[in-house]
Image (tube, rainbow, N blue to C red):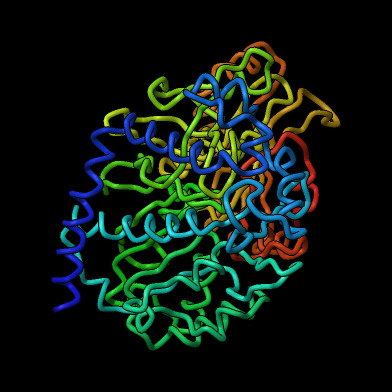
Length: 494
């Protein structure tokens, strides 16, 4: 009872505290901008880019071009070799190691200033849920975060690890007793072995909150059901809150309700190694509240202009509703005008709420159709609801040179329960895609493309593929779509 009362008091306090920046978003961004520039003036990057002469955002635009990790690499490599005050004052506390598609291993700095923002944002997401709903039952039960190993490594006196593993070292003491799994189990590197151990440890516990990327939580749930023969909700009667991020949950929701045996409240988060950007602040609203108290200055470039010579950089005050933007960041981790690769769309401007629409590199435009992740996920969600079909995982790729007939988009789907009529499901998917994407519709009407084709992936095929490339579990996820067939050509088919 004391925990519940304390949680409600803290939730109310944090809610009122956050209203200051929620109600004054542009002022909050200006303060963040001024803080970042002032703090980094004496760094190598600050001197190289004339931070002492930057008086306003226009000066910043002129002095600091858009860069991705490759554009920051020379500075990061310098830090990894031991230099200090390169991108941000002092030496980073940690480096979050991630795998890049073109850059190889990436080492994202986490500084004394930026590290606490990850913890604060995750805490505020839960407290906001308590304030909104009044529900506090989950605070007394066990809580599990399916994540990467917290084992850290030393690279030239620099501490490196997965972001989720690093964050595990910062779990508040008042949560340690409720946290699962054990430290030893969490350190297991092999994902399948780790999940088996987690099942054994949690099977008899009072689990109330479960968090992780949906595809890997699904694997945990399925193994629980194998052990018990009953829905997860029966095994954990107090399980009441699912926290997730990384992928769109909607295509998974019907399957999760089946695995759990009932509906469970959920909170969507938008974290990354580069920062914690947003969380779902209303249960009945799928938009995520953009966090303006996290020492991040945001810029936005319209996705259909990105990469062009005349691309325009927009501040928060210039964004429009329902436009697909590439997210650009400057942060207290020392990332400057950094292209994280994510695309977003605002669904509210008062307050600023957005949805994640995909990755700028994950798209299909083999014929000029500009198909993005949000479109294929929406199509799948609608088609599954209408057809009463449940899907475990899927990805989409173009088939440019079929043996006969016109080219098409090929949807590779692993079903939980296959449709009786696959062709009918394909037509529903195709119709939804045409309604969402006018370019795709024009290509079909112009006989450049034909209706999409569904190819069924073998049971466990996506997990088998992820294991084969060393990305099973943790923070890894299957791209929803790609402009080539490198992924789909390796999938085992049914």
